Length: 156
Figure (tube, rainbow, N blue to C red):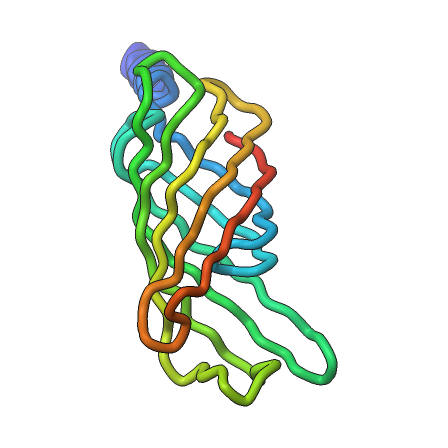
């Protein structure tokens, strides 16, 4: 019985420690950006609210008989004060596109690369997340294509 109590106390302490140093995890809906209209999951790689992290999403469109699914994947870095909630977001990634293009000049056979440069409002605890990013597209197919995105979500 005494051993059981010790195990329970240790498990509770470990749970508290995990919560104090938990990674920032977010879900958000992005309008624009590398997924056009996409739902995304973002997480820090370290037990921090800032620093290096990554995102994965799914989005696309269905217009005038053309359908496409966009799958953006990226790494990013959040720079800001340790105890803050306002961050500079810098990132780079790739979006794979499946489907039928709207225009014959569009080629969905290869993924395209993009950059993210923007602002992120991310609370220290759970709550509302906001992002505004500029996402230039890199590569031959979309040379000069400029995307911007705005996101609303939840940090948990």
